[in-house]
Each structure stands twice: as structure tokens, then as C-alpha cells.
Image (cartoon, rainbow, N blue to C red; front, side, top):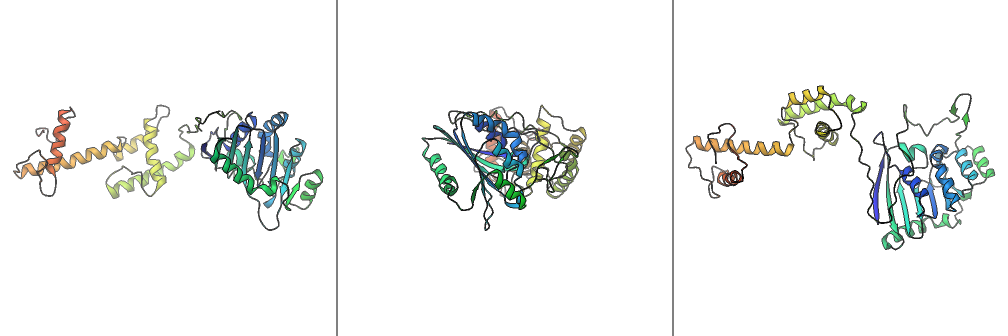
Length: 377
């Protein structure tokens, strides 16, 4: 079984969205039966996927939608489009509970796919919003995978077997009835104003929202074996948001150094945003594909001339420096310093450290006193 995490919405360019995985699965010949259980359905969501639905229908795939109409997000036009495509669609409408699943099932003779997560069948839900889903790919011989698939189907059996009293088949008349009752939104396009006639634009919920570059859809390979993975590591970029937040994060770094007398921020630091920003400075500086703003580089170097040195190396050098200070103190106190494990100076196992230094010197690493090179082990 292949288990993959599908994350989307955090980067400007994302090819491995939930929507793209759905398009690729519809395009694939592996799957013959498709069931979608979604709370919200929008025409804008269908617009990106409609060609894949059409081709899937041409291959005689069985496709069924089970859609919710709570919160008046699902639109009249989206339901009409599915009706036009001759795709069986059912509305789940309960007076007691909100219908809120986002489950996508793909079944075939030899291979199956389940996607479960937060992505509704809207343009933003499938491609733009910050969403999280889990994808499971497994063969029909995979006992764990088939157990999971059967659990999902058993749970939705009242819908799959069409015997739930809250389930209604979508017809032209039923769509109009729901619309007249104010239970569906309107995505009708006004050619004069160039806008959709909707009081709430669910597809552009935030000011300045723009569609991300999701690349060509339907091109994610679905392997016959279980060796493929979702390669969605994002290309490093310096964005406007990053530049805007940089001064405040640098002030945090200054305060951090003033408090702890260092600029190395450990991975377990309580402020994960700050720690991530710190790591990103190193990544940008070392990247061959992106250039750090000169002003940023100069400010960081001024704060700590060794800022871009590897943290592990810096810690190692600090440790050596401390031992050298102890050694220097022992010599000044006329100690009979010995490089053996039994020699202890004060509370410090100086002899053990010197044994390590001697061993390193024999290997050509030449650990010596930086302040006074006359002392050498």
C-alpha cells in the first residue's frame, strides 16, 4: 500500500494538488468505478475537471456524486453541469445534521485509490486553499487496503445503496425546487458586468486572492507498483511576504543574541516560525539557485561574523575553545598535565579530552590551542 500526504496552498506553484490527483485518477485506465462524497460543489471547481469527467464517461466509467447543500455553497449551475454530463448525482439533505465529507473513491479490477481530506469540490478547495489530504493507493490483493476501502463503503452504504431517507436524486425539477427555496447559490455569469451573480463569492474568499500555478493537470503518474511517491518539494523563493517580514524577524534574532549571547537557534526552539526563518537564512545563502539580498547578508554578518557557519561546527569550536581555556588555566597553575583518562583537573576530565586531541592529531586533524599555538598535544 502507498500512503501519501497531499498538502497544498502554501506555495505559489503547486503541481501535486488534490485536484490534480483527482484529474490523474480520472484519466487513468486503472479505475472503473468512481464515487465522490463532497459537502460543497461549485461550477468553478468542475470547470478545471470537466474534460476529465467527459473522457472518463466516454470510457464507460461509472461516476457518481453525493453532494451536500448545507450553508448554501453548492451552486445551481454546478448541479446542472453534472446533469448535462449525464453523471448520476444525489443530494444529501438532513434537517438535523450537516453533510460535510470530502472523500474520493476510485476502484478498479486490480488497483484502488482513496483520497480523504479537507478539499471540497470547489476551485479553491481543489487547487488554491491551504488544504490537507491523505492518499491511499493499493491493489485489490492488499488486505489492509481493501479492509479500509470496505470500511468506507460500509459507512456510506445507505448512500451507495440509495436507501437513506435524506438522499434525493438530482433532476432539473429538484434543482429548481432547491434554488427557489434559497438552498443553492448562484454562479450565473452576467455578461454585462463580467461577474458572477453571487452575494458570497466562495471561490475568492480573500481580497487579492489569485489562482496558483498548478501546471498541467492529469499528469501525475500512477504506477503499477508501489515505488512511486509525491515529489512536491517546493522551489525556494524570496517572496514579497518574506521580504516584508524579514526586518521583524531580524529584530527577534538581535534580541535572541542579546539574551543568549549566540545566534544559533536550536531546532527545538519554542518559536517555530523564528526557528524556520533562521534555517531559511542558511538555506538561501547556500543555494546555487537564489541570491540573498546583499543588505540581509551584511546585517547578519555584522551581527555574527560566523553566522553562516554550520551550527554543529560552531558548537564544536565553542566546545574546543572552552577546553582550551581550561587547559590554559591548568598550565598557569603549574599542573602536571597528563593526556590520560585518569587525569582530572578540578572537576574537569581534562586528561580524557587530551587523549581525544592526541588521537585527532595522529589522524591529521591537528586540534591545537588557537590563542597560543605554542601549546600542542
